Amino acid sequence: MQKFHKNDVALVERENERDENYISDNPQIDRVRTKDNYRLVSSYGTYTEFINNRLRELNLSPRKDAVVMNSFVVGSDKTFFDKLSKMQRYIFFENCAKFFAERYGEENIISAVVHLDETTPHMHLNLMPITFNGRLCSKQLFDKPQLQKLQTDFYEEVGKKYGLHRGKEGSQRKHLSTAEFKAKKIIEQAETIRQENQIYADALEDAKSGEFSRNKNKLKQQAIAAVAENADLKKRLEKSMGETLEYAKKAEALERQKDTDSHYARVGQTLAKSNPKEYERIVCGNPKTIGNFFDSVLSLFTPEVTKQIPRLQQIEAELEEERKKQEKQSKNNSYNGK
Image (cartoon, rainbow, N blue to C red; front, side, top):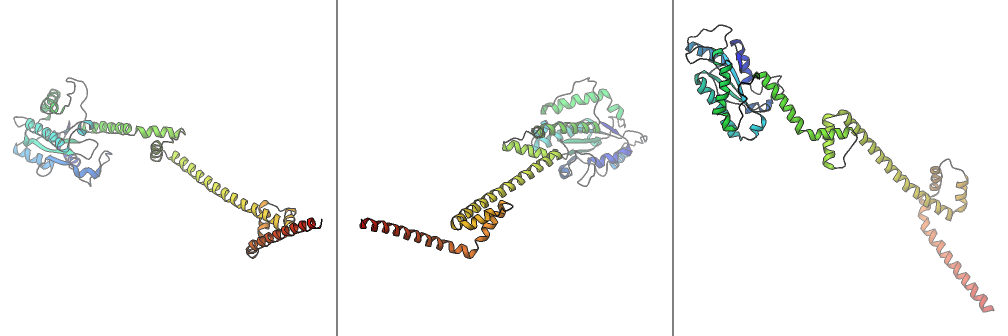
């Protein structure tokens, strides 16, 4: 619970009744979801106008430093709300607002606003501390014994139905202010995120140590962790990928060279068979490189010459066949002469 003087009321209203244009340094507020906030109790006019009207009704003229508004944050943890449907959640907050209205007077409730744009749903309930005899006195309504009784009664009438637990009665623990409550929620949110992303944290540690998984899902986790949380590792991965691509290019070039060398070898064999003298001249010319040697060989095979190779080979085959016939005929003649 928090206490506010009249000069502070407008700031509280601005935060409680915010819209999508509200600018805050609270990292928990998601402006996209601010439109989902809703009011269970809404005052006519501003909070300050409500307070002034109520003071006039009661004919009260409080001191400037008087507490004119008490604020409560009503909620629970994420686990509790995850179990509720939207309607159950609405009824829960409605019951909470009803409890305060019946206890402190519906006419004294300034507002009850449910916020759904932060880590966990919660309700801000603001009321004027008007006693049963019409006095403005926050100290009387909300001293330590009264606050303990408030907690106990709230648990019995509302919390117990939803399985909530009553804090240890008489505990010396300090009640959290709104700022402390939100700070606590931020810490809880950070812990939740840490737990939910533990798998990525583990993957990141493996990646940092150089243990890259061959499992597709595990590797994906490492990649996500690396890109999202470790720029240095991302650079290393990019460098590794670049080196891999460079290696692939070199391998491709070597394969092409291999094909070329094979082609050159076939050309050399053909030249040695068809033109031994020219082949010997090229070999004895001591070319500076093997490439120069094969370039010299290829220079002999102009397109015009290359076209004639099949015909030359055919003529060579016919001559060889004719030579064999002549040899056979010569042997037959020698045999008959004997």
